[in-house]
Length: 275
Ligand code: PDD
Image (cartoon, rainbow, N blue to C red; front, side):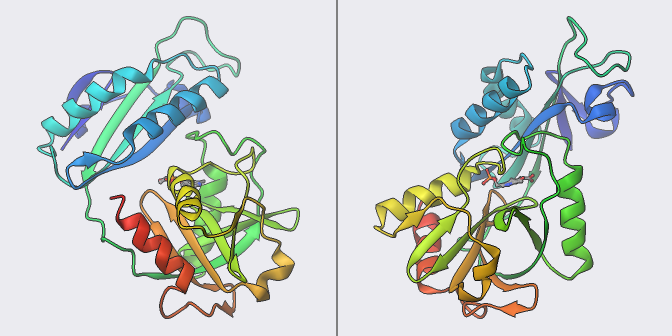
């Protein structure tokens, strides 16, 4: 298995970064996760555009256009051309003696890896989720490698036999530790607006578009926690989860636990046609 590190293809064991890399010391970096499915990179440009945006948001100067060739080279080196797989890309600010402010004139560190992974045509899982206060900062729109908040939130799920933790800020659901979240109530779909409190998922954006295409009423409004008992359907979206049914939130079993509710089912079907 080979990775791409600063433009070089290396065996995983040979790929080394400095202990003074700012990604390691500060989590000072940006990443993306995308998939290759049915022989094509799924919305590669959207992932690269989001990476460019995240890099700009932290003033990290790196030309994302060079990643396309690097991804191709990586897939070739791993015999993954045309094979379903997951691709991880990360740019950190680079290596320099530790100080908080940005060092001048250092080269960013670029790491890419790819792992074969199979994806179902439709995700038939029904996930249990738990809830927790959204204790993260207010720049959640940046896809940064400092993921401790998300790690702790996901660990809370793991410790409670759940797949995800839904995060709550000021009485409304924002997103989950590595997915966005949607709720359906009386035929209307709700999801948090794309602002600084969530990562604007590529899958989220596709589902928003599908709602419009299918004439399903969608409101980009955070769903309030106090209306939790009125939820008819709920689902998670994310690159690896696709569109995944939520069957239970804390102790509350949702009506669509055993199989996707009608709106979720339509969206799952429409989403699978994009793949
Ligand atoms: N997670 N929200 C958060 C906090 C995320 O980390 C992710 C993605 C999403 C969904 O975004 P997208 O649909 O573009 O994958 C929402 C990736 C997969 C990860 O960290 O592994």
